[in-house]
View 1: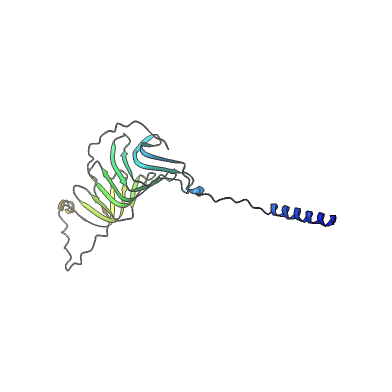
View 2 (view 1 turned 60 degrees about the vertical axis):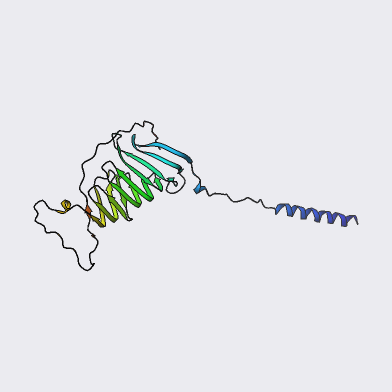
Length: 229
């Protein structure tokens, strides 16, 4: 009888040991992936951005998110952005606005989306749903329908490229309206093009490059604070 009790006790002990060894630690998965964690999120942003010691523009935004983990690293402005663009003498050159913006700091590339507009001191107005700003090449470009409006002319096209001062720009696959003086040659040797009949007129698919207009007087900004990314 005593030997039977000892055997039962040993069996129970073995079962308890086995049950303990088979227990698993239950760990809940992470709420957010590491790739989505931002290094900094700021609200009510109003700051100056410099590049190589030179102030390039002022940023005004409701929300600024900086993520250095994503590939590629980026700044995100998902609540809209407004920028003042400066030249080397800290004069205001133009104003840039968009519904959403991303800045890829390693490539020095801006991507602007949704109701993008640029207005410079020469009176030029640019509007599109997309615009890229390459700070390395110092140029703007867009592959979406764009409209360029100046005091003299209006251009529309599906491809746009310009220097970052918006003084030399090109529009292709374009249609537009011009002043008669823009189409006249100096020696009046060329005849005016005939208008197509029966509604067969086609949009101009040739490259259109607009001459440079004389720069207007620029106003010097009074902001002195800087931010170095």
